[in-house]
Amino acid sequence: MSQTTGARVLVVDDEPAIQRAVRTILGGYGFRVESAETGREALEVQTAYHPDVIILDLGLPDMDGLDVIRALRDRGSTPIVVLSVRGAERDKVAALDLGADDYLTKPFGVEELLARVRVALRHAAKPASGSAAVFQTGDLVVDLERRRVFVRGTEIHLSPTEYELLKVLAAHPNKLLTDQMLLRQVWGPSYGDEGHYLHVYVARLRKKLEADPQNPRYIVTEPGVGYRLLAAED
Picture 1 (spheres, rainbow, N blue to C red):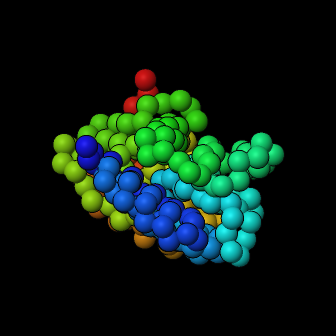
Picture 2 (picture 1 turned 90 degrees about the vertical axis):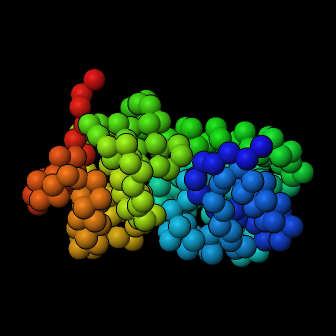
Picture 3 (picture 1 turned 180 degrees about the horizontal axis):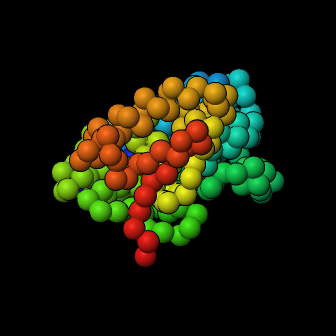
């Protein structure tokens, strides 16, 4: 039975049959799926697509999957579910030690794959503080598990980058995040000085989320430092 989640999944595997199978399985449950056949392509797609979870094969034609995990972890904490024919304990331990969230061996069962992806999404949706997967303050609701945003009960469409920026802010309510921190978490580790990117996207978010973008209630500026998402204290 199909159910809509809206979550974005990046499948990294050089076997077309595996890509088709995973795309069909996840697509039937409402996931939006992109794919990559090589490690380098995976890193490029990750930067542009901002997936919510990555399904990664370790046997890629250009890079070892363990090196891809290292590179992805340098960029952030997007959940990684390894899907590989390598079933040896040392491979599992190495992948998990490098930052993979789960490990599934081929051949795999449909229900098990879905369960692993859902668990990874639930963990990712909960900020380190342990708060709920649905962030709410005032009239703003961010469903971090289903990637949906509502203002005064109306769903708001955000671009992938706009959503990623809001997600990072919502994961750290009331905390000051510097321009550099936001740039690196949203755009990647090679960014840090491109403050104009950040300012443009903050302005776009305010237009969509704030009743008065010139006097924001949610996303406030700390002049010369960064931004803060204001939330009611429990």
